[in-house]
Image (cartoon, rainbow, N blue to C red; front, side):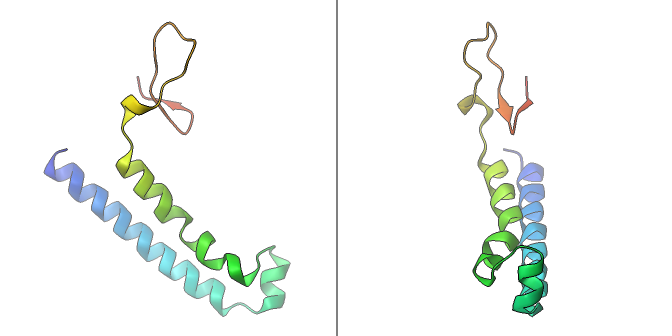
Length: 85
């Protein structure tokens, strides 16, 4: 992986961490009534806030050669159902 790609990956994950921290702070400030109104319990806040971080980290670790459709004449690497052939 090139240095530029590594830096952009780190910046993307860093931005995701920043968004997660902000989301966590905002959701934590809501009352139990407001959280219940939007369908979230207080125990879910951390998981919901860090969902983007997990996705960014998974994409950074993704190797296209590990994921192929079976039964096709030409294997196609995918990420989230999108072709990378």
